[in-house]
Length: 340
Image (spheres, one colour):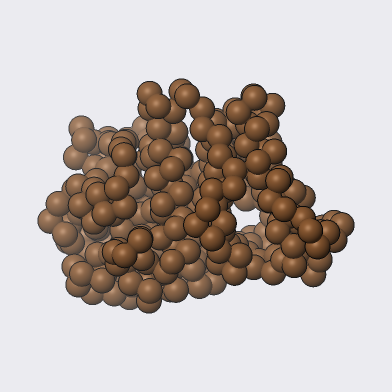
């Protein structure tokens, strides 16, 4: 997982949009994607006020949906909210060791580890020595993937700092959330997601990755979901938990999930509950909050509440700097066309 775009996002001055500007740039970007001008970009969809204003989805995605990588984490946050709404998980202040009784012993050995809460995992502040942005980190995701039991590997990492103190991007935190969810609802995380999220939004298909002989679901990454269904997730967040006429998750959870919780080192963005957060900074651009899910390779689900807009991009530019290109489309082409 590469770092997000840092201080560049929407902070540079660009020309004032003309009063009669249309959303033609969305159509243009869709045409460029369809013609292969943006190598590695498999899909682009933009919706404003419920209307599609630009759409291109590669035919290859009919065979298999795109790998969302870490954008999966933001969907896991929704699943945790649904479980809390149902009373299966008491609250974000619940202790992790209470939610993982089979792992309790390892948490009881360290008072700081015993103090870790569900919210600490949702905000990437577990305190564990785990940082996916540092290849030398003991808890790095690539080391976790080599193990059979990912949650055991994660839970056995030493504490680097007190829980709740510092942001450190750790996929293991979100894999642990999958096991917490499964224990709380007495079904696998993928089955819970199907019943309570994907079927209600009429998703075509969802493919999860598994570990430990399929005993664990990779809720930290690698979910495959059709771009049009990812758009529905964006609509759900935009409409504060409603999809069409169906309540999927509470308004209270959407608001909590998209509230700024922590600073991110060396970046202007903030982090909520597994969602990236920012806002337009240039006064010449239309002012809106930016809520987004992001995955290595250039997959984005961007929600702009004040503009009633959702943008979906999926791509395979793994570990390449140009995976961030969709954010520049947003800044330089899409937002200016939307006017003030």
